[in-house]
Image (cartoon, rainbow, N blue to C red):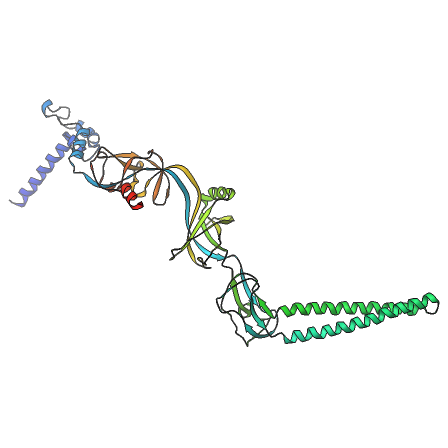
Length: 419
């Protein structure tokens, strides 16, 4: 057959197919829904369009043809599950970072040599534990000198007081003068002032003596000491070189995280009720700790549309470590009556979300409204009542009314796993 003959054959076949599609569109409705309506205008303008086929050979209706085509298809293998109805917690998931509630930098307030360090690098310390002892011999000597000066001041004051008493008695007998008594009283007042000044100096020196014993102001964990025993430390050193060590509080501890601003109302309600349980799991770890919301930031970040929260944890066993990333789950409340389906069961189309409900061995399309997504499940607010059998896997090959072949019942499998 020549090339021209092949082309003519293809052209004739195409004309026949096109004519059939126009004059008998019902046969294509099973595969292209709406074909009859779309070709109605074209048929009206073509010859013989108004003539109907004889009664004995009249094609079936579009619906019947479509149903027949669907019925002719083999069953589609699917997994099924049951629509759940019952209580369901409202949760928010986020990624947070552990932060110490308090951080203290240990610096010296005196110029001295480090005499001894009593804790090792990275050790856990309690409030009041001695960390570093500086050489305090100089200030101790100054204290002894001041104490001796105070003893002398007391002796001088006692002498001035005796003079005032004696001169007062002489003046009363007419043997003394008022001038001598006034001078004695002035000397007594000066002795009192000298004694008070030296006592204040002693108190100041005793305070300075405490600077030579550095203790932990909080309970936490100390970092690495920047200087060891024998080194000279100075109070005038800048921040970079003057810090001997840093202590961070690890118990209790904060975890800071951000949540969408759309959850703000629920979060405030949870805080008002005293709820807001927070579970934090360090990334890469298996242990979790439970705490509660402690701080709600006063401003929403306009750039991200989120608000910062801080949850507080007792952190027993140091599960959380400062600066560690954590997976955070906040439980805001528990709704008592919620209808939910697996996320894989919900499909999206031009008219919105839908699921396939299995009835009499067939998949029936059911429009639904999805409220929220949580824990791998969609919360259904309309379209399902609970207890229906739905297709949980394999829905991409389904059409409304097609037969299904159940591969696995996820509801039965979940019961077996639970037992």
